[in-house]
Length: 466
Image 1 (cartoon, rainbow, N blue to C red):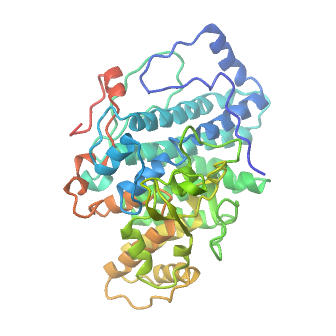
Image 2: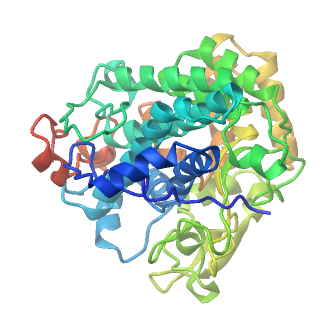
Image 3: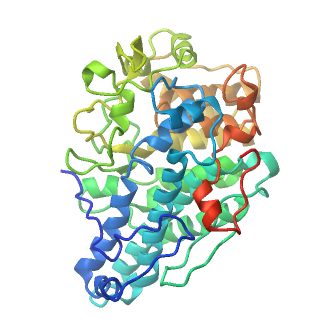
């Protein structure tokens, strides 16, 4: 049974379309905001409303994740959307409507999380434990939003050790006073994410009474797992190890095969819950819409790249390569597509945000970076290779050879889930072989600050090249 995410009644239904746009609160709306935090039931609906916003196509309903895959080299985007083609070709402009939509929805999640964090403590009838938990859930979702934003709209930490511009930090409840924040640095955004996730990990339960809630709501393990991802992107290897080990102690187990997708199993640390009637699809979008051949109900926009096919075929018998199907793509050619998201009719497939496999890979990479030929890193690598039906790798010529092997398994394990672009950038790789526009540090390897935001907020600085 899926969690039914309730869009928070009127008080949180307003949209902060940008962090600086003027919002007029009528007396009726203001009264509703006061009312929603006046009872436990409506306060809970406000918390679930943040999750509901996180379902949106432009947040974790697949669009940012698919862009991350085809701006890298896992996916070949062959669809007809000009705005998505621009991103594929590294020629996008600041008026790109998809770029603007992603920004807006992320700040909607942030705004609604801010409101919960600011007001949940005053709700009569909630226990202190419930107040702390609900605030922790909102902080987790705010951290997830900021991590995605800074990954997409700013150059990675590796370009200038995080001193470069990130995105505006908006952490206070909007109560009617208009502010025009400038962009914080990447380090400042990362510091806020660390703070939110550390506080969330302390406040959240390890699990819930419902198995679906344990997989679909923020938990202590989810907060620590997301921390391990952040530290990985910052190359803070000791902190990766600490956070990953803390996450692994939760109710999670590596699946024995690849039948866990959309099933809320112990493989899942945090998954956005969808159903046929409650999902992030808007218009022609959704995980399966992009990743499914046209004859099977999808758009056929995002098939395997030839580069990814070659990576799978380099070793015969890789079971992960069996998670595929062939069909007519949007360009009318027969192509190979992932079968991780099969429901193109209803788009009911859950959105995988954190799997325990990722956490083990984070741990293995950090161990390999810290200790030459780490035995534990090799064991983790071979556990994943065994699940994939591949022979163990026991001998590595160097520390870098082990790291490269872990990164390859990471690519094949997490393909189509939104990791590839950042995994390439943090190792200063060219996102697309032979394309100078896709080189590390390239101006259009990141998204532009949307033009409408620049027009509304004169304190915002555009990204170079836009």
